[in-house]
Length: 161
Image 1 (cartoon, rainbow, N blue to C red):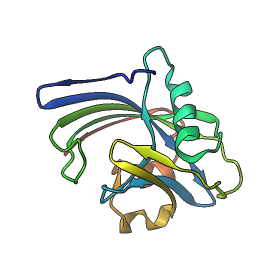
Image 2: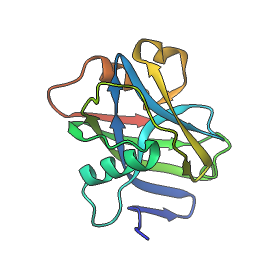
Image 3: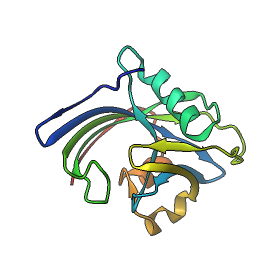
Image 4: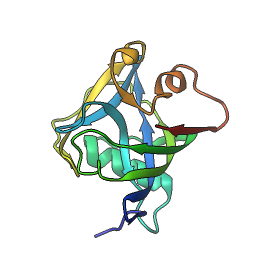
C-alpha cells in the first residue's frame, strides 16, 4: 500500500496534497463527504515517490472514476487550518501544501456511477456553477476567483484560518 506524504506530531498534522480544478460548461467539480459541511476540490495526498501530476490524475480517477488529464499547474496553496467539522481530523492543527492543477476538459459533465471513500466516509462529487460558488461553503476560498480568471502563470496562495 502506498504511503501519503503526511505526518503527525502531537496535535499538528502536515500533508502534501494535490487538487484538481475540473471545469466543464461553467461549472466546477467539487467533493463533499458524509461528515463535511462544506465542499472541497477533488484530490488527495501525494504518495511517496509519486510526482504531483501522477498524483492528481490518480486521485481524480479514484474519486470520480473518470480519467482526466492535466492541462497545467495553476496554483500552489499553503493552507493552515483547524477543521471544526465532525471530521476525524478535527483534533489537529493542519498545515497543508497543495499543488492545484487545471485539468483538460472532456467536454461533458457526465460522470459514471462511482463510489469513493475518504477518511470521513462516503465521498460525493457535485458540479457547482462557478457563479453559484458564493452560495456554498467551499475550500479553498479563492476557488471562484481562480476558476473565473485562470492565470497564465502559477499563482501562490497562503490561507490561515
